[in-house]
Image 1 (cartoon, helix red, strand yellow):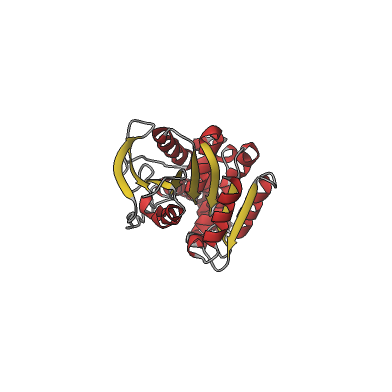
Image 2: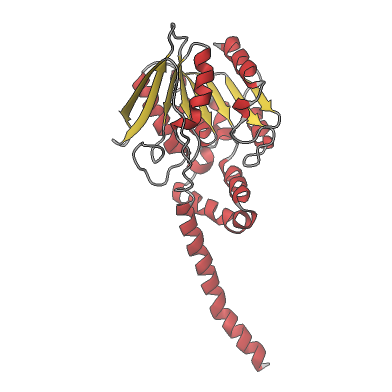
Length: 287
């Protein structure tokens, strides 16, 4: 009996310490996951007339931007937004395809990415602010293309600036932020994702409030006015195909089309054989 009481007494002291340690570690991880990884891509435009410049961000900081004009008359301007941890080089191959169709292409690095200014705690809303800064700099309606986290920023920017976006492309996107983050953390490491993922998402909900849900692509879809193309790899392990299918259902049927790339993962749908024809068909139909 005395041994049992002693064990319970130890547990009484130990349990609060374990809970405190878990909460503290998950709080630290909440900060860390918004800073890493950083995997810039080394690719540069090799066509047309390239302007490499710096423009102001919304907070007075700066964004690095490429604007590439085609040799012939331009059909319009396409803005490309890269995903988490990447940079403007990630979107060069996609921009090269649009350039073949005669478009001016504009590619930027979000804050805290590439050589743009540092910014702590980047998120989809801040990605959208950078997209808006680029559109303000261009000062005319554009086609807007976002990949992964950049797609979340793109739909927010389109929601807030409907008159400035003619067509919207969402590649490797998702419907709801919470399930996307949990899926991403489990993809990184199942133990990490299952043990710490839910608490990290809860800390984000505490810090950011309702916007973490209200600015989810699935919540904004019904308010989007322009035609939308959803592009997704069927073998995407970070954001499963079901995420894209769920998002597609949130748009009006006559407003949205999709290209689900066979044998493609999170970032290589644009490298599949069917990608150029599918995207060009969408552009020709709606532009």
